[in-house]
Length: 463
Image (cartoon, rainbow, N blue to C red; front, side):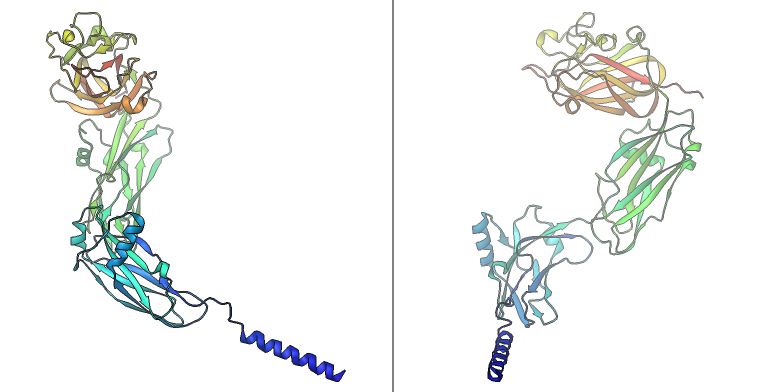
């Protein structure tokens, strides 16, 4: 028995030693490789310093073995990539880039380290946005290399350092005496990078800011003492967003005005970042709730209004079909139609234009507080687009609204409206003009457009 016991113990001890000697047999060998291999876009912003791309090298595996990794420019890597992907990339011109370091040491306690590539911003920024120049890098080492992840093509893209306010837009806020005392709206200024130093921004809310909105002559300014922008207008270093607050004291808004407006325009910044033109301003209209605009001279326009201007009509002005008076006769089955063939171009104080813009202007014979228009399409396929102008004297015209049946109807011939288009502000005027700038119908002789009904909207408020 004693001999058997000794034999069993000896066997167990030998087995234990064997296990210890083979414990690393199936563990992964260390390899070095590029973390993001293949094609890599590197975007940089113009921030008064030369941009640097970072290519991270990693060491994998269980063993804590040191590894020295070298990197070199390898044009052959471009040839291989182009052949495999059907592309035509080329090496950047020498001198427009440089290797900040060509070697990294991955020690037992460092698994990832960067290779850095510097670029000449101005030279590369002058290249087309879709340029095909890259920097091809290939790593080498005495340690094991993962060959499938040993190459990277760095494509530098230089971007202007832009600053954004918000997408250009207009908003209408309805208010009444029962509204909350204060209206607030968050305003955000943004840059697409970490701001390197404090940047002061300027938001313009003055009367001059209305000039940013085209013909803003009929925009009525909100009283300056009725609103303020709260918050320090400084985009801090290390931040990418600045949040401010527009605060409006509704109790200070004029009750004898249907709509007044606040322009907010990003006009300057201390770091001279490029202000993105498409994301620079917003316009807030403060409109009295519960006030319903009415049609000017509803049912009696044809008798009260007079034609001020018209440059095209199908048939003469005394004919019963297709002339301009059918725009305002209250009957959607009749319509104004511009000329479209040689027989329709009758010179009766009308030049009969054969192409856009088509213009019809009306004298309302009295001043009205205009706030919008209604346009009813003819039930046909001649979708149109254009804009509305107003005038106090019939000579100086200002754009106050635009229309686009082409986009609005989307090819649906059954959509006739009426479509309502509000003005950007109240307009105390006597003249209104329709300008058609786009039609989808044409003949070999002329383009043409038509409108079934045209209404002008006004509001009447107590002084």
